[in-house]
Amino acid sequence: MYNITIIIPIYNSEKYLKDLLESIVHQTMDFRTIQVIMVDDFSKDNSTKIMDEYTQKYDNFMSIKLNKNHRIAGTSRNEGMKRAEGKYLMFADSDDFYPSNACEILFDEIEKKKADFITANYVNADFDGTVWENPIFDQEKYKDFKLSITDYTKSFFILNSSACNKIFRKTFVEENKVQFLEEVPAEDAYFTTSCFMKSNKVYYTNKIVYCYRQRNEGNRRKKSVSFNCSRDYFSRINKAYKAIYENFKNNGYIGFYRYTYAKNMSYMLYKFIDSSQLTYEQRIDILKEMRWFYELSSILKVPAAQISLRMVINKILEEDYDEAINYCKIIAEIRTQLPKEVRENMSRPDAKMYKELSEYDDEFRKEN
Image 1: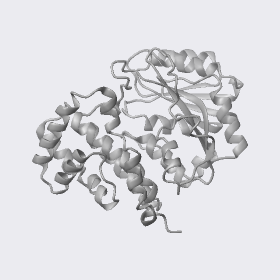
Image 2: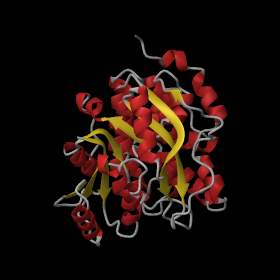
Image 3: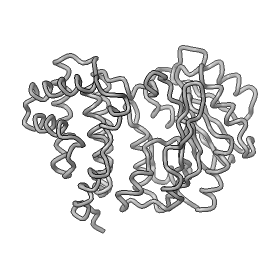
């Protein structure tokens, strides 16, 4: 049995895949104790040739080739977990890469803490692999600590949705039958939060274990399906958000979900506002489909991050979709005049917003 299995979903990744695989081969941890499972989602480029090259070269590499494109990584990750032989599971996106000591850090942490899973710090990198100076989480502000589902502030900020900066005990995942959502975005958010709700021992380490490549050098955003704001995208994300909400609700952790919702609500509204791919009729359909989601703003006592968004939501709830779309057009025009950093910060609730949420924490706390 291997110490770690790393599962990599792959789709048209020839440009960056070797960087990731080489970063695994050159880990400070004994490479022979790491199983690498590459799952190709019907790539059209030379990704499968690279996979075959590494599979032939290393006995601990495995290639799986799906017979059709599933568009989202959930299916590939689930297929990889079926064949995993490691004591622990890790996940990587095919265009990212690891620091040389990532596996050693995560393995030592989860062994020492006897944890269900460990979440860690990570850092962004430019499209050419240049690592940014500062990690995502301030290493002075956030020291190592144990996370709690009843901690709606510190744990919420640290538990990001990605599965890639984490290591999971395989038996814990199997015993709780945790899977990634398939055919929809936000599949890793569902997996990660499911694990959190089922866990007893989760720890954070502020050591950097992952390098997240920002492939769109123009605006420093990764090009992925999650930023493809088509009609189909909104249909899929709607299904994902319903599944995540129902999962929190069924497990009695709406208190924690409120903070997740606060971030997702603003994020989703701005994706809708900024999209240039949607027809008027499609916008109407999307608002009708997602009305349930914006109703949660009132039910959970989570206001939108900005007054302008609150006006849009009010019109959605009143089913005045024409006026809601008119508001969105005005906001979209204003946003085109703003610097990129300002636009991105608008979608993130600030400290004042989270303080407003905390005033109702007791009301939504899980009853034991």
